[in-house]
Length: 260
Image 1 (cartoon, rainbow, N blue to C red):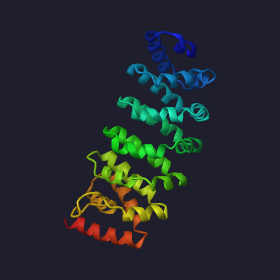
Image 2: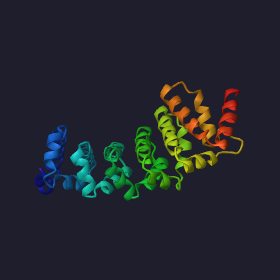
Image 3: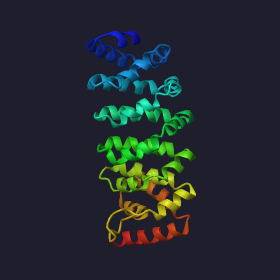
Image 4: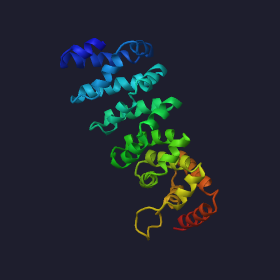
């Protein structure tokens, strides 16, 4: 298949990519394909101008990342950066495939180290502002939270505008976006530097906006009815309340929210 993908015309290339995706529903066939240059050809196909072939190729790469051997090959051959270029693709499904592939990779130490090494943290923060599809924003937030578990990633993120981005998504109309944003704030708050930054973080909203800032926004989310979101909010506020300034904000804002 690698040879066919490399040498055939566009019509046959499309058929080959469809066949590869069908075969790759079986993990053993994915692993078997790694002994050839097929993954390299798939990565090349991810850069094609044709939307259909690019989407099929990205789907196949995602399936490769879903296996242990495939993840390792993506990392060893330095293809993580190639996958990351798809995060700005014009097709939502291709962006989603890329996020899923990186999520598979980042579940393992070598994977998230590869993501951090390729400076993708700054890219993710930028994409939190650029992305308009809620379902893909959720994937971006899931990946960001997974990476935050690495201490070095947390330090890098706190030097970016990540809290501004998270503050905006805490106010999203989409429930899962709010929940994932809250989980990210919670993850960043585990470190002392993270707590301090979050406590001092102010929204760029008007000064008289009572929900400006991270803690006030979290306190407002206590009015939500979703159990998973409430659990995440409670954990985040409990973490931030470990600092005196955080505790004061939590008490004042929760009281203001209750009596609004």
